[in-house]
Figure 1: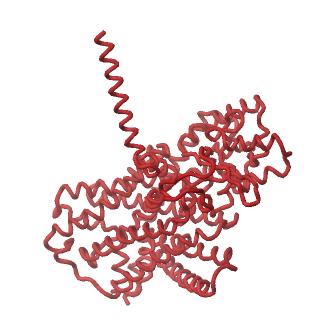
Figure 2: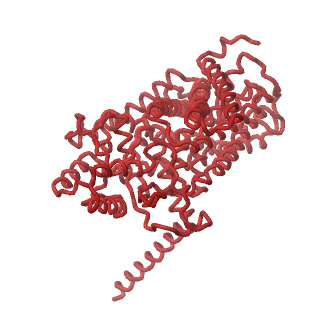
Length: 593
């Protein structure tokens, strides 16, 4: 009897603890810990180059309702605006499947499919995102189900069983578990037609956090070197200008609804190159920093060790990688804080804020000035992800405010580190400011040095697998290894699960080997970051958004703004070309003038 009472008491205690934890997780309404976690997980998929299948969940409340985050009642039109590509609204695909389907029961069945169950079609089969399927079909050429009308006819029992077996064999069920479902809701348009649209889920604080996660990275570590090359006057002005112009173009993205198919291909290529460059730079940072700490191990040996360390991380679920990215933000903020504290602690230069190093208002070598353009531009990459961040907002009319808050925080952090690095180390500043700090580790508090090394290790270990995931996914889609594309005409169909899994393992290992191989061939961190900033960041974050804006919204742009856009386009193209050429030049070969 006493044992039964003890068991009941322990069960009650566990239940009470579970309820308490659930209450804490859900406290805060739309901005609860649970909702933040879901937002982080969705944001991790924003980096994907090739759109993938997602699944739909109905919004239970159809019609007007009170949104605590919005502060007003009702469903505004902006709530459903998803103006970034032709796959954002199910409306387009909903219409495409209606033309050749009779009225009556079929229409009811389609409405039921959208509003019933967690993204399940007839018979409980999850058909995923029609928009994503359409994009994959156009980009890859796979044979897939693309029209809602076609999907609604797949209600035969044998068809359902075959589809279920196929999806289990190809591993699609497990892949879907990694992703947060999209919410869809039926909305009546002005013409009386009821359509299904994707409902954004992230609040403004969640949007700001996801945006900061995109912008804050290793680019800030090379800012002191960029400021050294440019001098105070040009460097501070250029860094401020780069923040302003990328803020401006981020807002331009919300003014037009589609890039077009060919433009999307170009963006995907540039985005893949940006992610590849970021992975290489992260490995260089990892090896250089640990070599400064343990000089007995060469830089190349540390890069080879990175393959061993990063390969297991490539197999972590996306939901785990999305949470690890939070550690990356904290690590970057921790690096800036530790450098500031170290500078205040050390009484004498170099490496001291109490006795700063000599600095220069103007460039010491004008021949090295173009190199600073890419270094000072490199922290602002992320515009390929901003469209999805906008699409995921609960209230897109707050997007501009969210961008301003994001850039204010990021600019403050970037400018702070740039100034700290130049003041503490002057002309001796290296391409990674952390290398300067670690070289003087014996003169700083040991605890801070250990924390610095920990933060430096966290950044590559958390960001490299997440940056590599879109590249791996794209290759899997193109080779038919990603079952979400349903490549019925590819050799991978019917492949045994063991062979399918073995090929995916080999692909992940190969990608990490390629990253390290490039890092060994191009070991200079400043050249890699200069190329990223001059060519990729200028192209993706400034030139292409302005070109698309002038092309798509030409009739709506005021003459003054159009002139401004052309001026910015000309200046940016010139600086991008100049910086790209300089990123391939060894600085030792430049003339001293």
